[in-house]
Amino acid sequence: MRARESGELQGKLYEMLVTPAGNGWRAVRVAFIGAGKRASFDTDKLRRVAAAAALNARQRRVQRFAWAHRGDLPLGAAVQATTEGIVLSAFSGDRYKTADRGAPPFEDVLIVVPVGTEQPSRLEGAIERGRVLGESSNVARELSNEPSNVLTPAVFAERAKEICTAAGLGVDILGEREIADLGMGLLLGVARGSDEPPRVIVMRHSPPDAPRSPVLGLVGKGITFDTGGISIKPADGMERMKDDMAGGAAVVCAMRALAILRAPIHVIGVVPATENMPSGRAVKPGDVLTSASGKTVEVINTDAEGRLILGDALWYAQKLGATHLVDVATLTGAAVVALGKVTAAIFGQPDDWVQRVRETAMAAGDRCWPMPLYDEYAEQLKSDIADIMNTGGRPAGACTAAMFLKEFVGTTPWAHLDVAGVAWLDESKPWMAKGASGVAVRALAELAFTSDTWT
Ligand code: BES
Ligand code: MN
Ligand code: ZN
Image (cartoon, protein in one colour):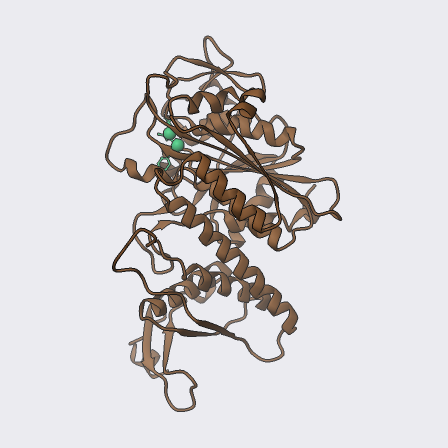
């Protein structure tokens, strides 16, 4: 209170004041953290503020952490978001360090809420949900941080199988033979240049008492390393392309979360996994590939590989029965140019489905901003010799990439999240360590609990 009056603590977002606890406190030290302007405070801010406080405390080697809840946000959602933030702060990206490792996670965490404002069982449910969603995000961060020499397509598939089997999901891993039998020429075309064989990770959440329809289909880009292929990328910053499977990791880990939390709906997850490499066998500009759907694609730029593998995967998810689709992909640099590292881009059809997905994602802390799919963009993809080209030139690069995907979803409700700008933090933020962000895990998992509002 005194610090507030003297101006020492202004309440700016993430500003922290740590002080010895006075008499009457059961804690050794108390930290106050600024939450910013009251008018713009919501559960998303709360999640970040809790994560920032917990990260700070962890860096101070605090072992027992208690959070005193304040404010008038709906308590269940607030407790869930607080738990997510605290769990997210436990992540360390130091698996390969043999010295100078980060501080361990807390031994003990307490969330203190006012008495009698909500049924204890509901609050326990909120904590459980926050814990599972936070942990699943951290599993995705771990996967995305893995270097590509460790996380090859085959290893990605094996890890996904372990993660999903432990969560009670059905998992099938398709190898080269099965991928060829399905006619996935786009995925095989991208995989040709690599010595590592491709995989398709197929996950099923099939609760016996769920209605047969709708079926949610989640599709994630699983490029374990993107060199660009023959249209090779510049050396500067190429190491970042080990996280080009962040969308795939989001799908695997969202499936984990929604299975543990028993989402009352059938969900299918499809992750096409491969490297994009140059070699004597690699696909070349001008080559024509035939997709599993039958459409032919002229490859103009081998660096536009994500849309190729997703084309086959979106087709496959529908073949497996998906009635509603969402894909997540680190798809275009153009999405980063358009929206920066602040928000993902969301595209899709029809508008009410896109809106449904967007609202869910925003509440889960996965920001996304709507972008258009005007028919005119399709003209940029017209090919002289095949049905479509895989690139549409510089203008509206994120839109033409989404337009390419649209060719493979027909009229099925579909939302596409281009997360190229938000899957990775170049600098650490008060609320999150640098590296993989665990983007879209919570959005996708939460979506599986909203099916009563779908049309
Ligand atoms: N994985 C990249 C997109 C990307 C860029 C993700 C930066 C994260 C950060 C994607 O495969 C790619 O290379 N896209 C090309 C497409 C272009 C050749 C039409 C791009 O955006 O430059
Ligand atoms: Mn690429
Ligand atoms: Zn890529």
